Length: 193
Ligand SMILES: Nc1nc2c(c(=O)[nH]1)N[C@H]1C(S)=C(S)[C@@H](COP(=O)(O)O)O[C@H]1N2
Ligand SMILES: [Mo]
Image (cartoon, rainbow, N blue to C red; front, side):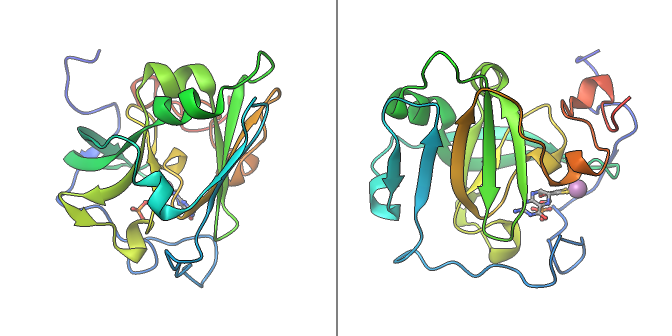
């Protein structure tokens, strides 16, 4: 199945549609975050909870990766080159305890989504702060968003403020509205079945 480049039901487009400008978000006010006051809280079922400043986050090793972006509404943007921090680096820092099975991502606009810890590690998800060497635009989630390959883009939480490790799955914004918990693009997991 994966030898075909586009997942089922997806059409390629050239540029990621910008939230607010041409793709609706969940509020009509886009968060404008200031790096001086922005913090990333990492909490829940972990041995070492932390609250990171932007400068602390920038001390993590940088990674660069090419990931296709697939919106559940049917458009895909191939070959997006993201720069950020591998999620596994965060995991090594906070050391999840044995109860930690899921991870919830909370965002400054009130959005949230969750994934399993296993898939975040297996898929090598990243916390991205640049796209093609450019700092993320506000519309793309400045300063930090999750990027996970092989999942619909609603898992790519923008304007991250908190990452919470949990024992039970917490239901995210679109998942509460019937979209798939798993969001696997290759299995066409768009809606809960
Ligand atoms: N914080 C936050 N993250 C979010 C959303 C949102 O409304 N708020 N929308 C999701 C959806 S449905 C999609 S398709 C992508 C859109 O990302 P883009 O604006 O970079 O295209 O972000 C996802 N992450
Ligand atoms: Mo979306």
